[in-house]
Image (spheres, rainbow, N blue to C red):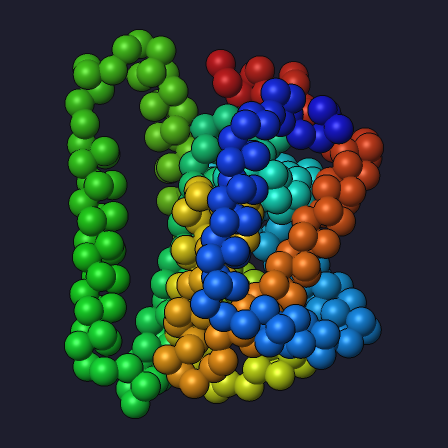
Length: 330
């Protein structure tokens, strides 16, 4: 286990306990406002074979995520094989269950990739781009959902949403420009060496725009696949809503799960989903039941992902290319 989870050798159990308590408090408050019986009844409607089918398909959809992750890191010069990228990616899915918020798995994923890749700078840049693609895809899907639901959102809400999206986009571009123009003399010699390596990784990625485009396409495939599975699971639980409504609400609920106030986003995601779907006529208890049923899929997939990562680590090419790493970092 330590070999598979290098970032968890000294886990912050106090922080984990606080986040678990946070999830419990959020769920307790949620069930104060929505009937638990309705949520439980919705969960019981999901047949075991249907649950298993969703779980296996969910894991299969994440293979596209593995390819996206590999494209981004190798485009920057990481040199990971598919099995190594899969080992890191599935370790990240497992780590998301233990570390703060959904993004917590990124810490473990990057930590393992740093041991396996030829270039640490490539891992840093590739991991950042990989996550940025995921967030951009979620925002794009929510934007399409808003555009397709003109009759269900008032003009002020729609205008406010578009203003927020444009503001974030402009802020991101400006921040990247400021960082790129910072004078090198402001940094220490050691930091300048790291910046040189990072610049090489950026240039390597820039020379392969096709990889970025392919990764973006894989990102849309992955998120739309997971979204579609959620709608199927919701229908099995008795929640029937137009797909365009899910296209608006689901990405926003997933983004809220990045907040590091709960364990693996449990509780936060359900609150956000209920707040977003109830105005469209959904029963709050049923929405929460669907959210909790989906959490069982995520938890089971995370545990299986940990086992997959552990098994992939036993393959011959699952070891770190230490010699190549030392040469590349000189």
